Length: 182
Image (cartoon, rainbow, N blue to C red; front, side):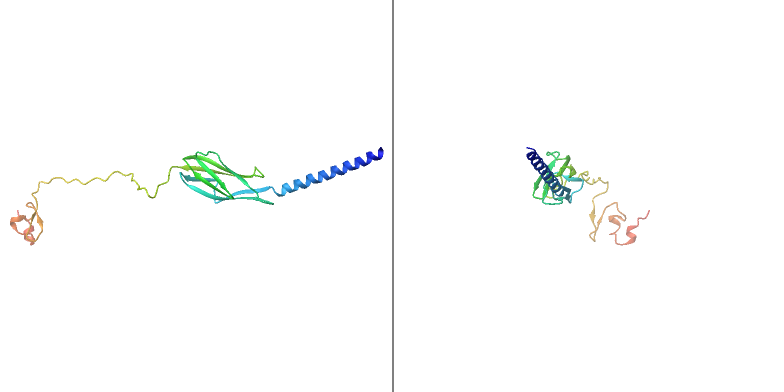
């Protein structure tokens, strides 16, 4: 019986050593596959978009080993909608306001990037005519004058009866005709 107890204790010690080695090796594998960083290429931490804008970005999740995947989420879907397709995300501005887009690694939720997005009012449609915001132009007004209507002269020029020289004194082609004497 003592012999069996010794053998059983040796076997138990052996099993404990093997299981502890297995736990340590799986912990090392998990450490190797841990995520180092998450980046969104082309995106800034703070962005401004106009209603209707769509932006597509490539997401890169860096880890030591294997493929690493990610999740993407909008804090306010009424303002900003996000879609994931492969390694790319598309951000669409729906209406004016503020929202955050969060991209997280699946294997390490602590590794994430948050993009703050401010959405402003609609952009100008290039096919729609722009209405100026200035005051309508003022039409020139013509004030009535007390002068008599213009009559053609012999050389096709217009002259009024009150003009220098007058119609009866000459045709206006001589300087003497243009100077009025008192």
